[in-house]
Image 1 (cartoon, helix red, strand yellow):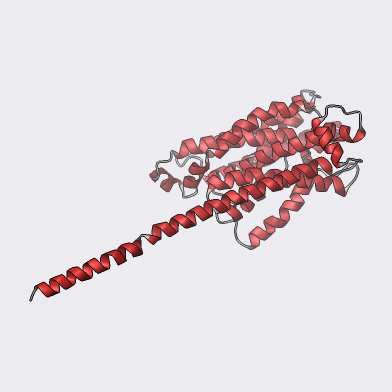
Image 2 (cartoon, helix red, strand yellow; image 1 turned 90 degrees about the vertical axis):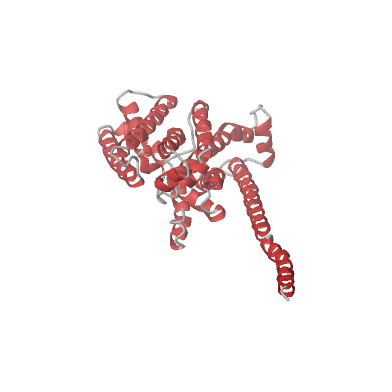
Length: 369
């Protein structure tokens, strides 16, 4: 009598076990499929972004004032003979501008993404650490007080000024028991920018000639007077890129808050110090080469998050690819707006960057860090 129910229970158990097992197995399989599809979509997005970057590079080489054909672009890149006017324009003018745009774009895009991640502030950009203000006052001091004339000299002043200003801001923000919190970094950066900006204005008002020489650099331009500046800045950008790309997992942890980051095994102080080093190298070199170009480090990371989400392991490489696209396209637009002189790239990036930034604000995507 008892065998029936037991057998029935066993039968029911044996019948249910495969069903429950079959029901439980597809869940991780489906999750794996979704994960693979997500990674595939992100990888495809990188390929598309690379194609956009290649198109922007080509436009930077082929579009602008002067009679330059497609053959001139190819010959200007491959043939050292610059007897032809079109090849001369490509090799001596557009190639340096394009290389500068690539270098500055990668640096500013990565720096903006790192700054927004480490500060947990959606409005963070190179200005929040006083980088632009520090570079500006150092360049003014080098030209007006030290009497520097060579671009390689006062651009190095800009790099050192940006570096020292960022160190100063981080040092002030680190004071106190809490350490370098996002709010303290933002406040110390704003205070440093105000003080250094006042010093720059005071120096410029004393010398009209100094103001005329400084104003073109202050707006932001890809016209580098001496290509040697690019070679001098390249090692700093390369080291900063390596540092920044390696910070992806740490920025993911920091975005959860300091307490959760520590619970996950992250050393918050070291992570912030590494991020500050990367930002100083990238922003200092970019600002020294092309001047304080705005909106790139602010807008590009938010645009990258529309495709990648909040994962900084993908936000950083996307930002490094999208930022030079914005810089090069802005430079091309500036050439076409006011020929033959053109509009400075810093002005165009502010105009072009403001439109998607307003769209992002209206969609309330800025808070999704």
